[in-house]
Image (tube, rainbow, N blue to C red; front, side):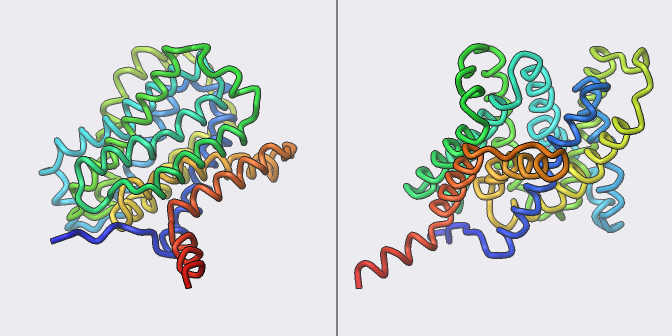
Length: 304
C-alpha cells in the first residue's frame, strides 16, 4: 500500500514558528552566557535542567515505561544533543556564528535524503529540494556578505559543523521509529541520556569548578536555555516530528536564525539591515515551495 506523504497542517506551521522563536532565543541566551561559561558546560547544564522538567511532564505510566528504551535514548541523546553540541561548541571557537548558521541550515538537506532512504512517508520531491536550496540561500543572504566571504577558511571546523547537522538529521529520522512513546517521554529520556554523555567531556575539558561564579545575567541565560529553549522547545519539536516527519520538523533551522535576528532587533536594539530582510523573503519563498499547496493552486488555476 502506498503511504500518504507527510504534510504540514496549519497547526504544525504555528507550532514550527513558535518553536523557531524558542530556538532562535537560544542564540540570544547563549550570547549572554558564553561570555562567562564555557560552551560544553553550557550544553551540559542546558540538558541537565531540561531533563527533570520534561520527565516531570510525563505521566507516571510513561515514566515507568522509559527504562526499557534506555539504549534508544542513549542513541538519541548522542545524535541529537551530545555529539552536535560538542561539534558545534568546538567549531565556534574557530568560525563565526554567521557561517555556523549557514552550515546548520543543511540539516533539512541531510534529513530529506536520510528520510527518503529509511522511511516510507517522508520522501524527496522536486518542490522540497528547490525549497530547501532557497531556504539555505536565504539564510546565507540574511547573515550577510561578511560571513559568506569567510566560508571555506576553516575547513576542519566547517566540516565539524556539517557533521553536527548530519547528526541532527540522523537523530530526527531515528527518533521517528519510536512514535509509540509519548513525545514528552522521548524528550525527557533523550535529554537525560545526553546529560550523562556530556558530563564527562564537560568536567574533563572545561573543569567548571575552577571558573569564577557567573553573574546573575549569565546564570539566568543558562537557566532560560534549559527551561525555555530546550525543555519547552522539545515538547513542541517532538510533537511536530511525530505528526509531520523529520524533514518538516527540521525546517525550524531556517526559521530560528530569522527569530534570532528579530529578537536581536527588538530586545537588543540591533539594526535590521536590508540584506537581512531580503534573506527572510528568500526563506519564506523556500518554505512556500516546500509546503507546495500555494504552488499547486497556482498551477491548477493556470491550467483551467
